[in-house]
Length: 275
Image (cartoon, rainbow, N blue to C red):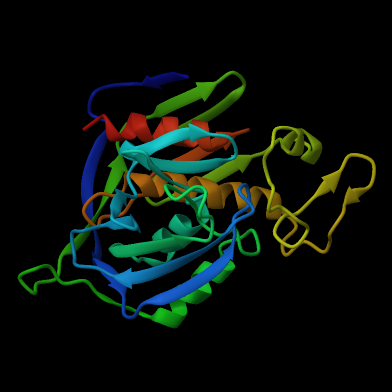
């Protein structure tokens, strides 16, 4: 991976004009994991202001932070002290987009043979069911341990920054709001299956395209749905920049071509290391 920035004054912080929020009530979702094919349950629960988003895997806690992200094929995985939680991107994207800044994410798995390895359910392959669950729970202002609300801050990009791997790249430029432009180029399904991935994948939770026959499970929800899906992944991966209940997505115009989770998290690490 190659990373280029123009100067050391890359980031400033501004107020979003909003207070940090959490869910008003716990809500529970159960489903199958895309890669493991195992059933798991996620509970989204309220948390105090400043605590951010974190996963509770039995007695182990893993913050939804870029510090714990590791490179893994076709999903984002968080690891700490031998425990892991994979395919976190759609859930985190939904939380970032709906403004759930602080929450406890309790995860249980049905797989007794891998008690330290968890996977977030893929559901229908989008963030729709996560957003519906959050809407069911409702939102409220987070209060800290002193009973006070906290202002929500956001990173603002002040200089251009670029990261790339081979012919894939992310370039971000100063802009007045969050804007994302994404170009795609996907792998074929058989390559993934031969690699031992997508054991829980089906036409119920993925959109599948054949070079000879076109879309195998139309209709698409949007004409640009594949690009929208990559934007969803990017939002979830960049949400790992969130600290202390603040916004994860940087205020910038982010342009991506042939991106993936590895490049997304490379870029997030670049931003996390500069001030």
